[in-house]
Image 1 (cartoon, rainbow, N blue to C red):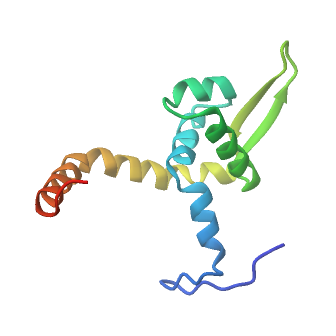
Image 2 (image 1 turned 90 degrees about the vertical axis):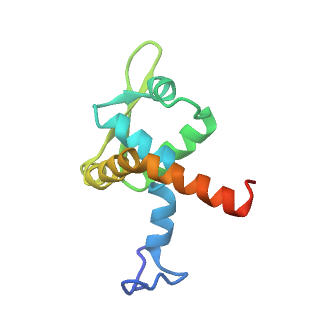
Length: 127
């Protein structure tokens, strides 16, 4: 079913379909998976090895969400044992530039963010 609810610029109504999409493609695992898949098709176990700390359940659920949203494609590979290859779709490739910009921003500004956290914790008591 296609969403007909308009989302007016800065007003993200509860019915705005972009909210669900943000939730499903803009989380840490989705961004990391897409970055790994930028290098070409990758098997599940290779993804799991390259994404330190991801659980099998989280990886599986994230891959399904990305596939459902048309961001990645899943292909069963006829081999022994049978394997599955994941790769970015043309739609998924359009997300790489903004995600790469966020990644660069995070790397460029991590020291400032950490300094802000320390200052905040010092003024508000660390939790």
